[in-house]
Length: 146
Image (tube, rainbow, N blue to C red; front, side, top):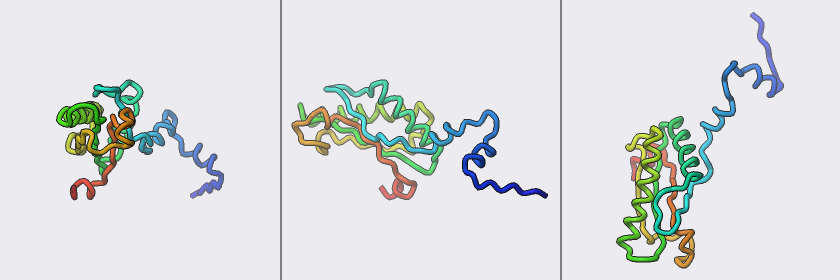
């Protein structure tokens, strides 16, 4: 039996690659997208196309990490009645959840919270920064405790 020892990482990586195997895809699927916050226009609840693309990347990560759940936090600014702001934050949350579910993530792995304007990111006067959805990753143990 012959054993080949490669101490050159580049040669080792090249030797391990099977034809048709895309190592870049594997790396992308194993890394969680860094962007966890998505902002919305005034009185809007649908993420724009670039945000949808990043949310889809989160779905890919979640599909490849079945032990992780996600909590989706919806927020609004403080303009208008608080009841409507809570409703709008839930609409934003639901839009993100629907996109994750359409990408194959089980609803049981997604927790939702609609905060209205009660948890501003910035000062209440900075309304654009406060109209957002945030993703929070949870391990199975954390999700069960909540």
